[in-house]
Each structure stands twice: as C-alpha cells, then as structure tokens.
Image (tube, rainbow, N blue to C red; front, side, top):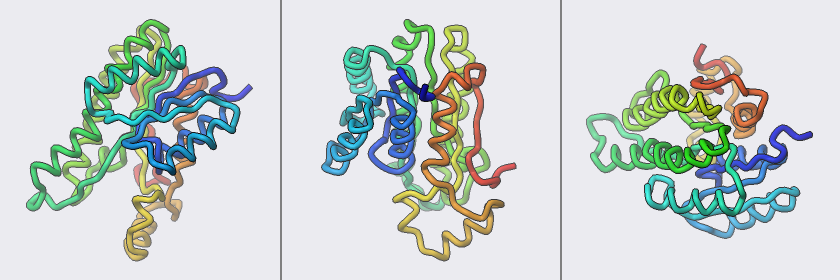
Amino acid sequence: MKLLEGKTALITGAGRGIGKGIALKFAEQGANLALTCTSLRDEVMKFENELNQMGIKAKFYAFDASDFEASQKYVAEIATEFGRIDILVNNAGITRDAALKRLTEEQWDDIMRVNLKSVFCMSKAVQPVMWKQAAGSIINMSSVVGVRGNANQCNYAASKAGIIGFTKSAAQELGARNIRCNAIAPGFIMTEMTDVLPDAVKDEWMKKIPMRRGGTPEDVANVAAFLGSDLSAYVTGQVINVCGGMLT
C-alpha cells in the first residue's frame, strides 16, 4: 500500500517549485489532490493532466489563499467534491527582498498577506472539516530564514517566523481532535526562483551548506509525505529543518 493511499491533500501554491514537487510526491504515494494557484495557465493545466494520468484525482483551483472569504468558499467546495481533506499543505509564498532602510510598507504588507495570512485563512477554513473527521495533518512551509533570520529579508523572515509560532499554537489547540500541525523549514532549495540567481551567489550559498549542495523540491516533498502520512501519527508542533545541515 502506498504511503498516502486513500487520503486527500490540499496544497496551496502548487503550480511550481516546492509546491509542485510536493504534489508530484503525494500523487506517487496515492493521494488525491486539490491544488491552488493564482491562475489556470497552460502549464498548470498540463501538470493537472499529468497528475490525473498517475491514477489519482487531481484538480487545480485558482484563488487567492490569503483572501478569507475565497478560502472559505473554495475549501467548502473541495471538501464536497473530494469527500474529505486529510492533509493541508500551506505552501503559498513570495519574496520581496530589500534592506530594512529601503523596505517599503507595500513590500512588508505583500509578504505578510501572502506568506502568513494565507496560513491563517486556509487553516481556519479546513479546521471544521478535519474537526468533524477527528483527524488531519496541517503542514506549514516556513524557512530556515524564519529560524535564524537573514540580512535584507526582514519582512520574509518575520512572516516565516510567524508561521512557526502559528504552527506551535495550532498544534496545542487541535491535538485533542487528532489534528496535527507541523512546519517544514527548507534551506537553499533549487527552484525556478533560485535558477535566476548568478552562479557566484549560488556558489557562496553552497559553501555555507555542510552537504555542499542545494536541496531539491523532492527533498522537501519527502518530509512533507512523512508528515502527511500515518508514520508521523505522534508528531505535532514540530519544525523540521530541510537544509543540508545549514542549521545544526
């Protein structure tokens, strides 16, 4: 039996990068997938088709996960269509990097809305479904930057640190109903966002990583699959660093 056989996972920001990697891994492990993105562009629909060819049910929904009313509406729709929601992966996120002296209010607000408010909105929306089931796993995507900070990323670090605080608090509230809440803190992961960085910048990052390589979306997805599965039935309120040893 596959690790996530019979489970339904809702993954935000699943159109690319880490979210796409998690969707692929979950499909390989037998989960049905409700996926969110900002728009149903051609590449997203192609990916949806690829997932459905893997013998599971997959469907993309285009909405803003940080919109409270939209999250309520679409989560209810997903619960009706799929019958249940066993796993929520709060992966939607952006960067708006700038030194503090140049950081604008708009850059701060954008990060907090997309990275942090979306976690609240989606967790709030999915809670009644999991509460009724008396089971569920919420997986929040934080970052090593949220654990230790990083220059020129005060807004991003604050949002990712906020996710950790949310995770630990939600775990304490929801544990009695067998709903678990954990966070993953990825390090330097090679995605479309990092591909555009100059080689010199990438090389400098590699020197800071004991394993001397950047991570892959699959590295993060493997941990997400563990947290979504029954193998982690007694794991909640934790932050798992997936960073090649950057944080020890």
